[in-house]
Image 1 (cartoon, rainbow, N blue to C red):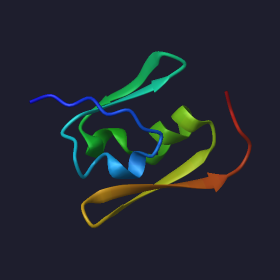
Image 2 (cartoon, rainbow, N blue to C red; image 1 turned 90 degrees about the vertical axis):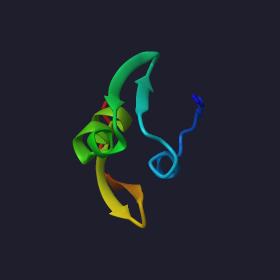
Image 3 (cartoon, rainbow, N blue to C red; image 1 turned 180 degrees about the horizontal axis):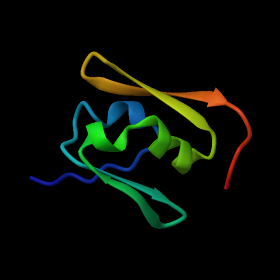
Image 4 (cartoon, helix red, strand yellow; image 1 turned 60 degrees about the vertical axis):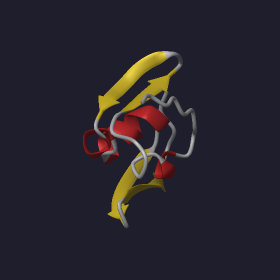
Length: 71
């Protein structure tokens, strides 16, 4: 089965996904297993600010560390 889910809340995805695709302005920024995609640098590039990722309870929780936004 294939299910396509669109969300801005990445905290929910790893618990239910084998593979994820991250897009920004319609372009693929990262694709693969959640463990490879949900990394601080990947999300920092995606969101334009410093990010930290903490695995907890089978999910990856992303936290903004603040700082200047980048485009």
